[in-house]
Image 1: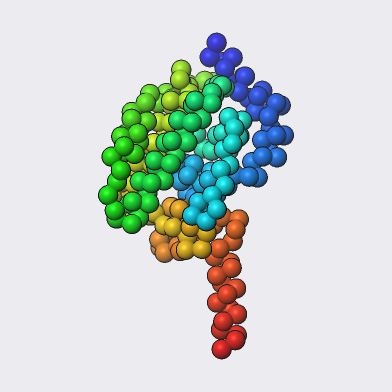
Image 2 (image 1 turned 30 degrees about the vertical axis):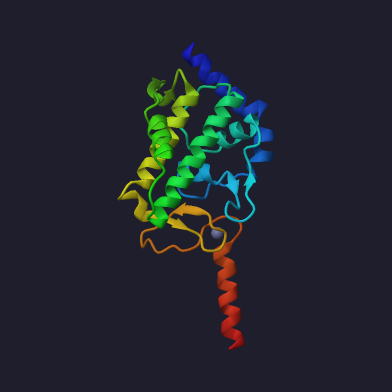
Length: 205
Ligand SMILES: [Zn+2]
């Protein structure tokens, strides 16, 4: 039964959705530096003209496949679960914004975050010498993992690495050693554009 689940996943991944996954993965960027921050980034241009990238359950499944989540079993998701996931995502976003601006957190957001983090996580299983993660309730396990990552990022020590790109406003984690990153590394190329602007203004002087 357990091995069956693993095979289902591999089969599903390789043959059924890989083409669509490849086609659609280009909509998603995983450049924010952490699972929860990448999740927040599924609304692009948040502070300009927000674009919701998770418009359906299948979008969400494509996004999940591109993440570093550990769960291997295949599973279905419902519209209600997608709604819950988006509520959690928005709560995390608001908490991070409050953290960055040093303003008070909304207690309801904090409650949802902590409730999600308390959900049962996936557990490791040894399969032919390989560790794989399995959950009886994959959706809740995913919410738990995202919430845990958010909590670590928002915590007093973790939040020192939180940055917001001055150009596109994307929130990211500065995992570099000097921790002096200003610009995001999204495909919008904010850092490069800033460099070009600087060069031009130097030339013009
Ligand atoms: Zn940017």
